[in-house]
Image (cartoon, rainbow, N blue to C red; front, side):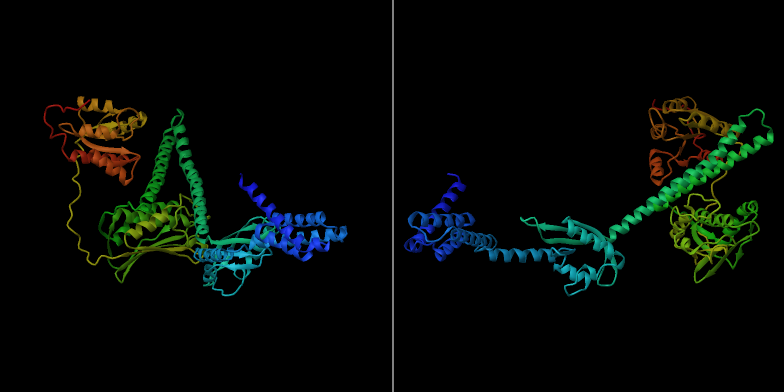
Length: 610
């Protein structure tokens, strides 16, 4: 028999028994409804067995009185008894549902466990009445806020967030919808931090809100991180826009000069001007690429310093000598450096020169015609201070605070660039154990950049060689150019032949290996990424495995330290990054000739795997 049918039969049996007892005890002898016994029987049935059993007991009492006696009550008295008894049954069943025997201890235990759990959560948890009055705060609430009373969120919310928070809370209570709002709450130390406040209504069987459960989560760190990411995205977007603009400017000059050189009616001065434009704009493009590579290296900590003893006064003289002509082109006066004694720094000469060139170039561009740029160096307390001061456009206070960050540029800058130069300056200076700072009294009042570096205690140089031996200009080399871009290879071949060298071109690995077998080269200038078949790394390994390997120079657009390590492992002796100047390429060829590999070979031809 199904359980629900068995329960129903049990309720009927109990109702009949209680109805019979009530009727026999009072109702039948008197001919009246057993008011007291009937109410008691209905309450007992509802309290012990539920609402259905109570209603069935009322029906049983009335039925038995009607069947066994002639009641003296009228219909209204009968209806009144039934109504009162039904109300009592309903009340008893409600009490039974909420406070059944044995449940009180369980509910107390559950409430205690729930509060223990809430007290150990690392966020502010609260319970509110349907009207918004706070019923409960967990222990973290009091620890975070420093409060000890029954104050609500209004006591700790930031004044600017009060109205928005109150409107969100009222709207949630009115619509019985979940609460979701961000507000700043005051911590016990007085600091305001952003919180995400969430609340859910607990709705009973009657469809009404019985209470609200909610939690406030500290999201200050997440908001700061999101703001940082947004700012970084904004800077990157700005950088890409500037990069596009800066690339188009030299490319426009290259395009115009190329068109001019293709015209037959262009005279010699016009062609010379076009060639000068090509050279100048190609150098500009290279500087931008070098800045990008430098920024990548310094951010990844891959800049290697080749430290030597550098005399700062001589370095400033060198910078002044190389930049004075540029200053004249801008109409700016680059004043000769001021020296106070002799100051030596152990650092990378090339990198320190890069730092000073950047600062001096910026100072020149910041000046109007007729204004001056001053250079000086002084030594005090074991530190040298290099100063670059200009009388130019100056800087506002807000920009000074962030001008060494990547991609940051002054809106009034005459020559925008990529916004990387000063960031590179800062990183290189710090690698030398120094610091760079800037001071300006405001727009139009010039600026002063100060560079402090630790001085070397002794000016005595370590033993060093006299540098690489120079190769006599009469000695020429056979250079094999391995490059899949034929036009680039052909142009480089022409330049090398004009310098007196003999050059061959191979556009793939197979052609390179064939030429090396048939006409061995002194120096191989090899691209790394070839379009078909083997790569430049494979070419290097095969040439290195021959009886008399040539001098191998990698020539690639990849210039990270990891790329240089890989080419060295493949057998390359040098690594040039595109686009290298003809002077750098000629220096690499001279270095190859210095090794004397060509003259030291055996008379037999080398065997190279095909």
